[in-house]
Length: 409
Ligand SMILES: *Cc1c(COP(=O)(O)O)cnc(C)c1O
View 1 (cartoon, rainbow, N blue to C red):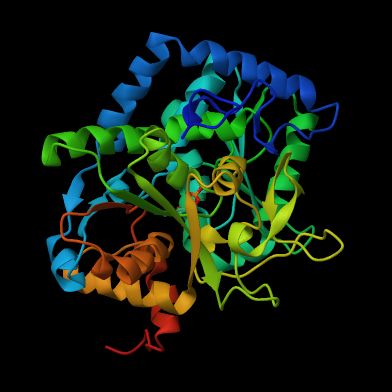
View 2 (cartoon, rainbow, N blue to C red; view 1 turned 120 degrees about the vertical axis):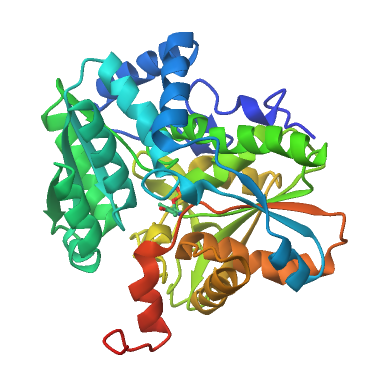
C-alpha cells in the first residue's frame, strides 16, 4: 500500500522536508543558514556509528531503556476483548518519552560545538528533560515558557531551576506554548554562533520533524523486537496520544510499512470537538495552514488566526500537529480520533485502580480510546498503547477535577 511518491512510507520526507503537501521549511532568510547547518550535521550523525553508540549507552544507563512492554492483564480482563500491552516509557528518567529526543539533540549540539541550549516548553516536561541533559553535560540552558504556564506549572519551573536552567517567562500573545516557541526562534537568530535550539516535538521546520521522529523511533523499534520475543508476531494495532505527535510517531514509524498493523492517534477533544474550539484536536477539528516553519493542520479561526484550544492535559495543549501525522491522515495510513477531558479522567482512574500504574493525563487519552474499542475486538487481537508518561505531575489537576479537597486527610 505504499504511496506513489515513495517506495516506502518510511522514506518520507523528501529532500525539501515535505511529507506530501505538509512539512517543508517556512522560515525567514536569517534562519535559513542555521537550519541548513543543522540539517547537514544531522545527516552526518545519522550514519555515524559512534553517534549511535553514545546514544545507546545513554539510553541504557542514563534513561533506563529498553522500557518494558507490559501485558496489562487486568485491563485486558476488564475490557473483555483485545489483549492490551502498555509500552512503558513512563519509567524513563524524568518520567516521560521527551528525554529520548533531548539526548539526541544535545549530542548533536555538542558535535556542532554549541555551548548554549535553548528550548520552548508548555507544561514544562520538555523543559525539565532539556535542563536535565544540559546539567549532565555542563551546558548553559535557557527555557522559554509562556508566563501563563509559568504560573500553572510551578513544580516544573522549580525543577528546571534546581537543574541549573534559566526559565524565561514569555508575555507576548496569550503567554502559552505557541508564544514560547516564537520567542525561542527569535532568540536563535539573535545568538546564532553559540546556540542550539532543542525542539520538544515532531514539529518545526525541516529537519526537526524527521530528526525528532528518528530519535523517538526507539519506542517503536523496541516494541517490535519485544513483541516478536513475547508473542512471536507483530501487534494488530498501535495507539498513542498526540500533542505535537512525537511519542506517537516514535511508536508508529517502524511499523508504517507493515500493512496488517492498524495505527490510531488520539487527540485531545477537551470539552468536545465543536465550533467553540475548546479542544486541541488539530487534525480532527482543524484546517491546514503554516505555523512554526511547517505546513500542517492547525486550530485557526476564519482569518487564519491561531487559536489556543483547551485540554485538561497541559502536554496536549499545542494548536498544531507534526506534519507527518497530517500526511498519514490524508493518505489514510493512520486513523485519528479524539477523546474528551472527562473520558481521559475516567481512564486515568481506571489505570490507577486496575494496574497500579498512575498514567499522565496525556496517555490517559490513548487509554480512553482503548476502552472504547477493545471490548469489540477478538481476544487474539493484540494492541499496544504507549504509556508515554507518568502521572505524578498531574495529581493536583486530577484532584481538582474530581472535586477532592487536598487539605483534607
Ligand atoms: C509532552 C508530552 C506529550 C505530548 O507530546 P507529543 O510530542 O505529542 O508526544 C504527551 N505525553 C506526555 C507524557 C508528554 O510529556
